[in-house]
Image (cartoon, rainbow, N blue to C red; front, top):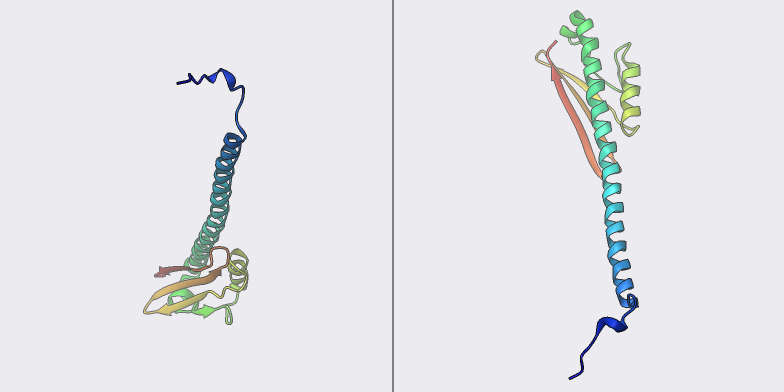
Length: 134
């Protein structure tokens, strides 16, 4: 039986190089996929955070105008905004997908603000619903 020696091998074989390139390529593709999902998720989180901040801003306006708010004067939608809230509806559209129509409903002394929009990046709908008693 011959004694096989490693003295004859002076480098890596082409097969070893191809396998290592394949493993590296799969790893890089995985990282790129994770980066893409991360960017989409970050954008969705930003839209949701802006919807919450804008809703809180509207609630602050209602607190300032407490008498009108308690009378149900802020019952509105983007088709029929209360005077002075037009910019708020524009801000909601700019913060989400541009086609969003927020609804502010008055029911038994409670305001319910619903902001519902289509999240095209995540291929789903996003909804923010908040309630306030003036």
